[in-house]
Amino acid sequence: MIVFEDVTLRYRPDAAPALDGVSLSVAPGDIVAIVGANGSGKSTFARLCDGLLTPSSGRVTVDGLDTSDEATIWDVRSAVGMVFQDPDDQIVGTVVEEDCAFGPENLGLPSDRIVERVAEALATAGLTGLERREPHLLSEGQKQRLAIAGALAMRPRYLVFDEPTAMLDPAGRRSVIAAIKRLAREEGHGVLIVSHDVADVAHADRVVALAAGRIAFDGTPSRLFSEPETLHSCGLALGEAGLLAAELRALGFDVPADAVDAESVVEALWR
Image 1: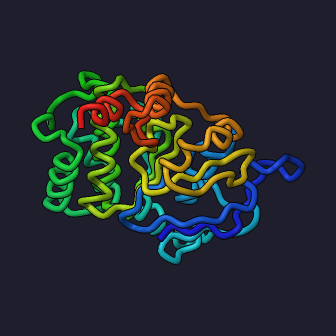
Image 2: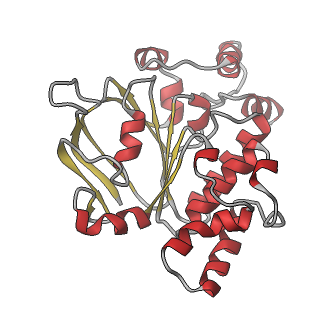
């Protein structure tokens, strides 16, 4: 379990805290979304999960290992895979399978185990058959799934996605969200989605909204989407599809509060 215990982080001693007294946990199989406006502390939170940053006070543990302990930091980073917003920042190989093998190779694994891990990771990410494709020929959605596969090849228990759909078109967004759900529901990974886009978090089990580094909301997606005052106070807003869904509910249509993208609104109307 990833556990934050009263975590505060200041980038400078005299600066306001980027994260202020945050406590929460993420267990294997959970999908937890961290949302908030720019400057709310979301990316700071993500980088605390695997020790890229360490707290000014409080502590972060991963399966009992303190991320501030240099003696166990590589065990922490083996347990927590990071997938950043721009997949081009993580792609290093000249072909898909080579890129996916980069992490296991750095672990010093035997070649047969590397081949096994790469095949499993690419299959999970939906990239089987593209092993010899050059990454620059992939779509943005495929690149993001390659970044996911690269993290999966390390066999982490937890995956942290920082703005995973920010650069994607609707088709790419659907494929990445489907992959994320499969990782939690079928593979048992603990998944943390960090985003400013409320549509990214509709399928999460739990949503934590940050405002000025503090937890301003902790609950289900449907509860958050049904509290416009909370959304506004956290600098969040429903997109056009979410606003349409709210108007349809006001007219008596059975559209759930967590229908915040076009696909989910259409699905609700056709039920």
